[in-house]
Length: 211
Image (cartoon, rainbow, N blue to C red; front, side, top):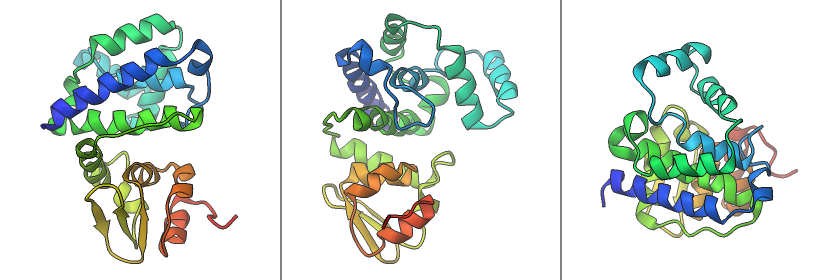
């Protein structure tokens, strides 16, 4: 299955998750600092359907920082109601433009990580197809906004549920989803990991695993 097809399937799963959530769950905090569940859902398709002129405006407003640009777009969309957000998720079920970059792996990886940003704090289960997970894990190591290889420096990270590993050094093992989230900077995923290299990853993330 191509990355573009997997990215579209991931968006379909995200839409199904969004539709299943109660209005109260939409307002709950996500794993993204300062963002609610609705903010994360808004962000997923915030770059879709925008002209080069609009993207240039956002880049200037965000001082050309991807994180600040994301914040600009989410802040501008907070007046949308639940139905409007759902409608946009349906309209842009297939990634296009910027998010379709690298054969769709930008949208796939971003969507998969953010789906966990929603479901983890809400205590919801998640079954991620192995092909999507392996593709996202590999891409996250070198994607500039994620910097997975930097967070996993000095260790070997190895998934126990899919055929994927990366790096050298003392091993860190666990479900591929938890490894992806840790390498994306979500320290709460450390609780699902194990191995002699875990303290090193904790240090890389700036947290004390033993606390």
